[in-house]
Structures are given as structure tokens and as C-alpha cells.
Image (cartoon, rainbow, N blue to C red; front, side):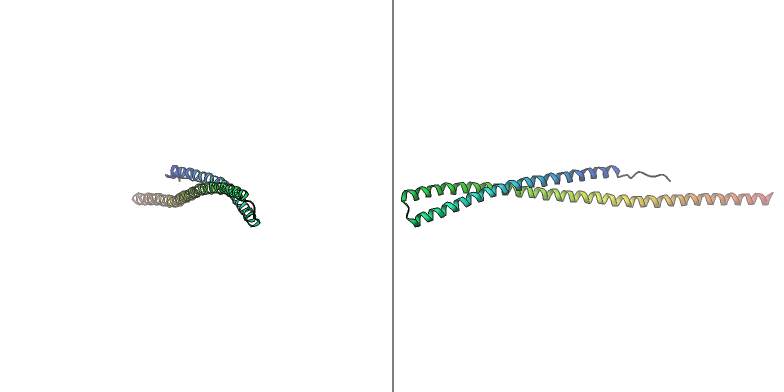
Length: 170
């Protein structure tokens, strides 16, 4: 019985290579997402520090107003608060822009995950097909062996029958 080569071996190798590439891509996308999330956390921390500073200065202004501090000092504090508000707005914009980057990275991770899932399915389907093909080849080989056995049995039967007739004529 000769062992036949699976006709889709090259396709299996290609699909496995693509699966490995998809796994690598997913890992890379996850790493990129993690970096962007870390950057986002840093930007949020800086924004929160500016926000806390703003709240602190706002509280100081209220205390000075309640204490009846001079108008020039209060005007100076209000001017400083405007600068802090502008800084806070800048930090908020940075956080919002980074949120867009993080969302895009999350989308890429999800797309890579879906691609990996699809490629895993392709490899699994080929694995199932290979198993079914092996079974069919085994059945076919057994059928051929049975057919060859039948032919040999038939041939031997004819030969014995022929010899028997020759003996009877002799």
C-alpha cells in the first residue's frame, strides 16, 4: 500500500504561515495599544494635576475675596487663573486627541483578533479535511486490496478448474 501525499499540503503550509503572521500582528497591535494607553494615562495624570492646581488657586481666590484683600491682588489672581484655565484646556485637548488614538488602536486590535480567528478557522477546516481525506484513502486502499484479492482468488479458481478439467480428459 503506497502512502499518497495530501494534495493540499502546500495550502496547509500557506494557511499556517498566515496564521503565524496574524498572531504576530495581533501581538504587535496589543503592544501598540498598551503604549498608547500608557501615554493616555500620563496625559490624564498631567491634566488632573493642572485641574487640581486650578481648584487650589480658585479656592485661594475665594478666601482672598472673603478676607477683603486688595483689588490689585485679586485682579492678579484672576489673571493667573485665566492662564491656568488655558493650560487646563490645552491638557484636555491632548487627552481628547490621545483618546482618539487609543480608540483607533483598540479598533486595530479587534480587527487583528478577528483576522486571527478567521485564519484559525481556515487551518482547522483544512485539518478536518485532511483527516477525512486520510479516511477516504484508507477505505480506497482497502477496496483496492479487496479487489486485487478477488482477482487473485478468481484467477486461482479458474486455474484449479482448468487443471481439474485437464485431469479428467487425461
